[in-house]
Image 1 (cartoon, rainbow, N blue to C red):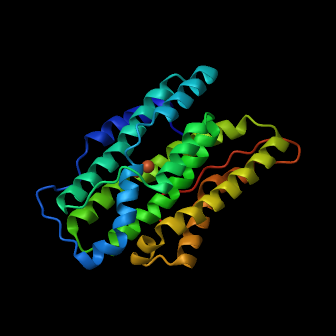
Image 2: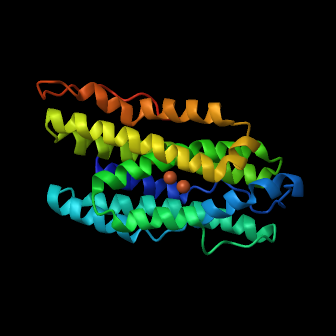
Image 3: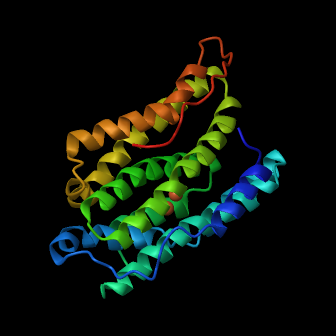
Length: 255
Ligand SMILES: [Fe+2]
Ligand SMILES: [Fe+2]
């Protein structure tokens, strides 16, 4: 488990690394782009959030716990998400497709984020969306023959595994402070929120998932596997007597 200082240092270094050759021309065909464009546009919009509500929640949490450096790490985490939005936007500009200013899924997610002032629920929401993002960007990468778009996806996928680890470590810290019965109750809340949100994301972006050969059964299987590698690990710490057990988390990489 990394400290907030270590996460700040990781994000600072990672933000300096450029993995995309912008000198190449986009090569996606119309047949490739047409079915996936609405999802590409919606995720581009989603990745451009200013993160102000998350920063507010992080500041409140940092003041309560004394982990003041956590806010700086969260600020760089948001910057990395904005980099994804900027790269996807630049690609849309290059293929002469418009950037969206409104999408129902994005509006719904922004509303939830606006109402959400708890670091715990922020963390659960972000882990859920990041798990789906890994399948989303792998699907996008597999759905296109365009090398530039593949490089954009690879860059995002490289960033996403540490994002999940960053949030998972925070969730574990928050979860470990709960009593046994409260842990049990919260675990099942997390689980049903995750599973329900996974279905909403499927409904909104199934054309893109399918274009990348992730049909419904494959998508669900991957989301459940990701749950077991992330939030699901918390279950091993719940004991009827309220005592805790620490086990190392498995790798968060891959699908
Ligand atoms: Fe992202
Ligand atoms: Fe992310």
